[in-house]
Length: 334
Image (cartoon, rainbow, N blue to C red):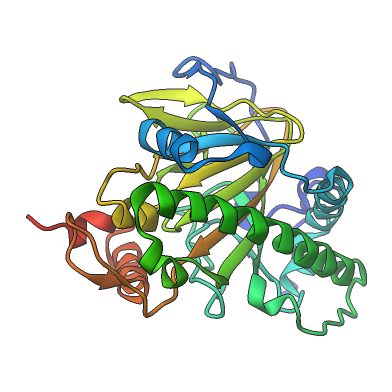
């Protein structure tokens, strides 16, 4: 008996991972029903001082960065080319080389630079997203992609973007260490060689019950720097209340990560955040995440000494065994 091949997915969903090919049903989009909008602190990169950075990091754990001197045309090129690549059929994206850029889908929980691998998430625990993961140290490699030469251009653009992001992160971190009097440890507490770039596409929200592209979490980084398109969806938690972080052109969102909270002995806050899906539109964002050197020992009055390698191993164990990250509290001095 001849077995018929399954019908092809609808054209508008052919770029989606197979387990996420669900048509959007009619429902009321309650995007703002559970959150308010409040302005983040706005910091001018050309006028940063340790006390200004420290105040925003203590009170919010996040701020908006302006006057950063990252070329707007570079950001536009990355967003446009990312959109083109994400629009390719899913099977084409899966066939791309896995280095120096890895295509992933369904979960952002990948290993850090150099050890990333496709999580191949099961259908019971999916995030409605896909992305490209690019360890910054890998982007200097010579790279040829026979499947689609645009992927080579994408790699070059991300390399240039990563240089700019490293410049921003290094200067911001310098201000943080001066504010916290951590200058003696700063050379090992932030390692640009550990940085990774992530380009995310959040898919359209399929049902009223499935709201989240990424649910509530904190970043494991020292510093994260985000550029979001004009669709919106990023929310942060402040004083147990969720707030929308509205997109503003030509700005970056900078947030404190778990490692920075640990280094600061909880003076700075690794802010909880999440991403809400949009019923009508997909959303593309660019993330830059930078970490300590793997063997750098984080010393703090609130936590027992630990290395980032220990923290990462603990996080990956939690995700594998529990399905969520416990994080810093595992290292807290009780």
